[in-house]
Length: 333
Image (cartoon, rainbow, N blue to C red; front, side, top):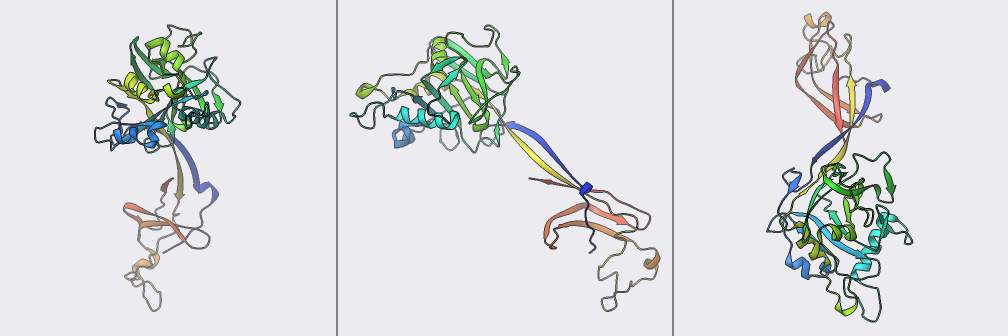
């Protein structure tokens, strides 16, 4: 075994962005079937959100639907004697903290302030690092027809940010291509169709714009008369018989290490068949002035001689005084 200290210019760091289909086990970008779990919907968590699966066995969780309302409308109260403290107000407060980071801020979709929203949160196991802007195609079917939504990431000149990271408007169109029927892909009176938040894998839908376009409208009743079925309304009105296309995005950082055996280096072997175990002398005199060795493995050590990584060559590399080599090792993390 021979050692050589690596220099600064022997290391190169590279970062590559990798995109892939988002949905379960198939690396596909589109799902067309959507199922719910009656057990989850009837349980305590069903008051807050509705899990959506891509198979009838409900083994492949894809995303969850939630409805938030600033006034607490749309669901029954925890205590009927306390106004405004409902499941929907809790959802609204949680997303306001997560996305806006300020309880005095409001959700403004395309210039229009909204007091409620539907949230679509992709399951953590589905995406790598973030959602891929420009890959979204969301079909919404309602009593008023069909609406196809995407994000405006491909046309904005300046990206907006909030506590959730990047913010893109949801607009009419598909796969990042905007429907130019309206200048910005949304209505001046009802605003954009919501926000696309790739860094927290979340889509916020603006009920005002969705309702005016395709008639999918949440219930905003309050008190004991509140139905609490707004999550199911989104499921029935939007995802039943529809399609959902989206990709994930991940930045893979690679550390390249270049090992350069020079002509005068690594020509002698310490293999027991090469040298004498008692004296350390080369067993064969022909190898003294004309040695031949074969490089099979490169080990990377730190300054305390701890082995950190091992690289195996695809085949032994012959080495003698007439040969030099350049071995490139790639470390992904």
